[in-house]
Image (cartoon, rainbow, N blue to C red; front, side):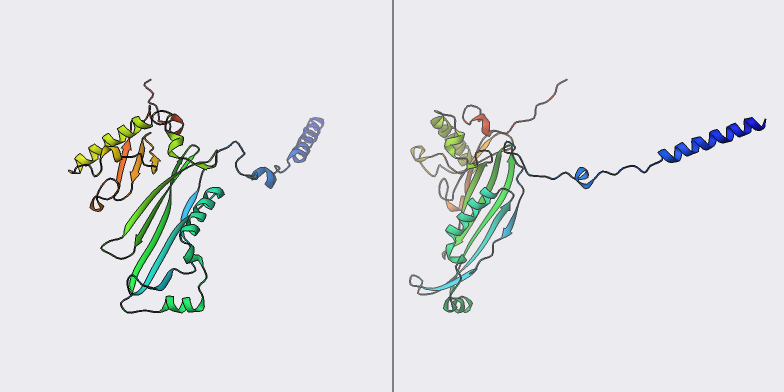
Length: 271
């Protein structure tokens, strides 16, 4: 009986010893294994564009000067809302456009000009310029951005200009009208747009503002998520000022616009 108890005691001791020997804390993964470094998209990958608007800092947000036409002082206030993204080459295009068009406001003023800009002249003419860039989304390799520029230089009202940009992230170029239209289909596209213009005139109870022979395809366009393309016309191009700018949307683009530029539409599963 004593031998049996002794044997059991020795066996339990050996088992406990093995358990303690094998009871090691689990190994933790190194920082490198837990958080792999991100080196950006590879050469053959299309990045997702991330963008936000911001107020551009100007050296002279207001510039005043004597104007012979108005026989007085004119003060022009400028506001620029730019776009910052993770696509450097697009940012450079927009920044260059801003600095080229609004060059004066980026010039450091002389002391004389600085005092003139700060002087409040009674009866002076107050003009204004503004431009806003917006990121409108991305489908596949194509990014869309819009610009609205407004200008007031006296008179009953100011005027606004609209511009749409479609950028190809693969070729790193701006997409033009020539790029998207199927070869040999320009006249057919023009006729389709004219028909849309006639519908627009009918809806707005007005006669066409221009003759058909004077009608052109706008270079200002953007691609819709539903697979259509919208062509935008500036103020006075297709209608009087009171009617505003005109947008003509084409939904049937299969035989007019290259399929590469049309977003893939979801398909219904009938099973």
